[in-house]
Image (tube, rainbow, N blue to C red; front, top):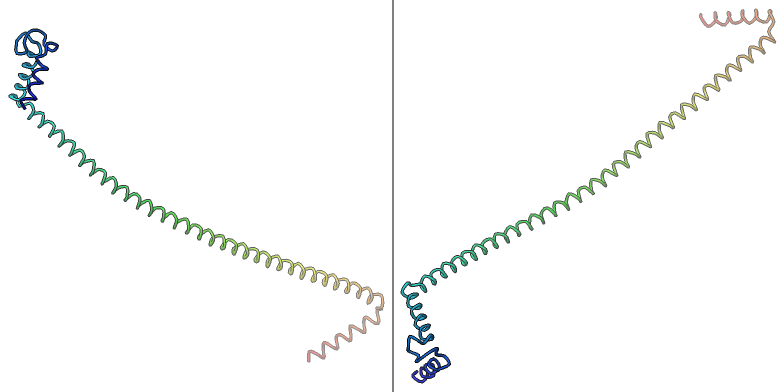
Length: 185
């Protein structure tokens, strides 16, 4: 240790480092600065500044630690919320898929019902049209028959009128009366 002190003392006492005179003199600025530095360190120790700085650093470390703990808790809470929202999103997606599937099924069923209703409506209209056609056909046949009867009656009337004379008419009347009397009794 003594050998280490000598070179340090030699360096401090060298003429290049000393402003004026020997090292341990009040005229040497390096010595004055050394004394001021030692006095400053002594005052710091007396005022317990290192302990206060240590306490402040410990308080700061505790604050940082509590901030980190709070950040961890917030992170865990955020992860929990994220997992919850992901589950909810998955459930909502599944529900949306079910709704879409039900809507598709309902659309297919509704389309089939519409097709069935349209087919039934067409069948009813066809049946109604056939009934109207049959009715029109029957009316036409009846009209033709009525005209044929009218024409036949008119033709018979003309034929009978042209072949009938008064004597023949009286004989037919008498014959008809006799037939009615016979049938009545």
